[in-house]
Image (cartoon, rainbow, N blue to C red; front, side, top):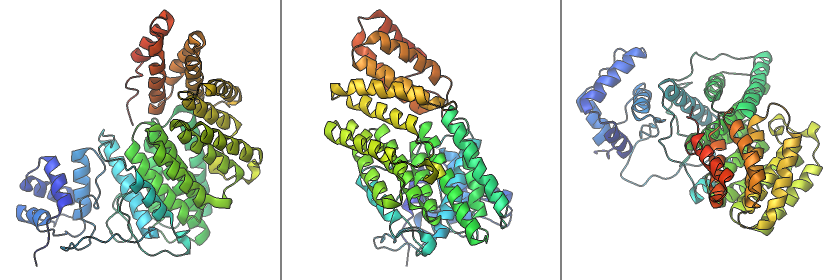
Length: 491
């Protein structure tokens, strides 16, 4: 029986501009470079992949994924090409059950990071694939996390959206640099320390400077997870993978690579499940929720943060629950729901008063008193666009956040300055607004964060109402001249 055409491969092939003969020659050349000189693909074989839905054997799927990634300048995986190894029939596909298996998570981790690194080596930034949003995002996140920790046994599975499914290449995918062997507690401790260092870099200077280093380290951790490690070591490795995945996602979001960020958040949630840490998985969801608010999708953010709160449940510490409530409040503020916003902020303050830092996991350590005030400032500043009574609380919390910020948190300090300047402009105090806006512009130049430029652009819109005030109009032009309309390059 004739198989159906591989529409995924056909569509992407059309984007490349290659002929079938060109693709055949490229596959042979790349395969030879990977140690498979015996591969002899020709035009008729390529036609069968496209038109007959023939699924080639290893190493062809990963060769094709690498070639398409380079050509299109975005992550393309074997799943994207319709080469997952499953037979195609003339019947609708039935979605497979979730959550992912352990092997599926490792494969997704190593393949996606490998392709991300490949794009960076060739000067691409990976912005060309779609951001998932709306009900499908929340529904699938819910299904991905269903069933508790997969460390207790979950069937093999694949998702309908999210991080691409890696084709099976034996015990590991093709992108890790060396074959992995078991590691000991000292090696894991060194990886855990590396996470701490990466977090400090990100907090101080933004995601653009060290994102590639984090992705590379995550790729290596994925390689280590293919080895037969002892149970406690493997659990700690999964925790490292979760922390690095969420950090890679946050750094990607910080530099404007939002589809890439979303994929890392999903991988991070799965890795946290493997580590048996559902609150950590929930924190990954909260990052995705913050991303949605930033991108103007507060409704999606509310659904995600609700899922995060349900996922973590009473296992989350008061500090973590306080952080969740601030994200919820920001989404409510963006929707102009003053009462709901203030209710969520009240819950955040109540939870934070019960915080016991000694009981908090390391990954929530960023959420201290300064960050609580910083988030309150952002929330009230957002709410002030529809509720003028929120202007003064925004000023007060921004000032308190700046007072409490520790050294080494320049990006957060920049956001505090932007919140404070914006609140003064909304309060019709152009002199104070201009003072803090100039400090914000100066600070933004010193961090590699696209989000700071996004916030500057929002602040610039507030200056438009002061065209008759020469100092403010000079500020309006200064933001534009400083790059506020485009921001820094992505990395």
